[in-house]
Structures are given as C-alpha cells and as structure tokens.
Length: 156
Image 1 (tube, rainbow, N blue to C red):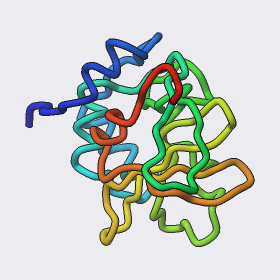
Image 2: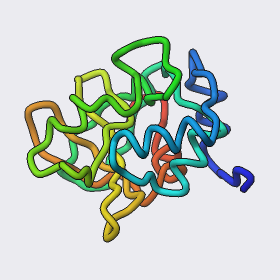
Image 3: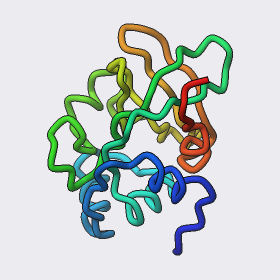
Image 4: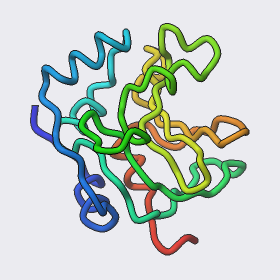
C-alpha cells in the first residue's frame, strides 16, 4: 500500500528536525503483538513511510473550543534513538486506567508535557486525541494525516 497523505509530507518538510529510521512491516507486527493491539491502517502507513521524529514545536490548532493550545515536540517511532520518543512503551500505554487491553496508545508529545494519542478501539479507531498533562482528553483529528494538517507556525 503506498502512502497517499495530503498533509504529512509538507509537515515533515517544514517542522521535522530529526526523522527516525523507518520500521519494517515485521517490526510493526512485533510491536502490535507485544503490546496486544492493532494499529489503525493509516497510522501503520505513517510509520512505514515516516517513522516518527522530533519537531520544531509547531502549534497544534485545536479542533474544539475548550482544547488547550500546545506545540508538537515529537512523534514516537519504533527506532527512536531517544527513550522518551519510543513507540510502544508499555509503561506509557498502561498509564491510563482500563487501557488493558489498550484502547489508546501514546504516539507523540508536546511542549507542555501533554500526549498525542491514537485511538485503537474499533468504534474510534484512528482518531487522534490530545491528552493534557494533569487534565482532560480532547478530540483533535479523524486520522494521522488530518492531525498533521493542524500544525501551523506561528501560533495563532
């Protein structure tokens, strides 16, 4: 399956300061098996073609009025050279009550120590959520490409 993303290539060109190595399909399958989850197809596609990385803190435009504004610092990857940006950290996944088996998985973080999560529960599979540090959950986007379309500089 080829990548057909509208926003991700431009966001990586503008904001990614360090792109992580790409995982193989086998490595993604191993992550899913070891974490007892199935990643959404568009997010799997993102991992295969972009792998994650560090970002220059572009603003994340909230999609709902009450969502706090924050800036993206990293999108986690399987081959991240940094422990804080490693996808599939079971400690992060099990941070949330009733997340065993997982219904959300942390996939990125922000300047204000908030998380970017992807929903893996069948009803909301692929939706991207903002988890405010010491606060609530807020809907951001219907999928990973839509999320990258919400990145802007300067902050508005």
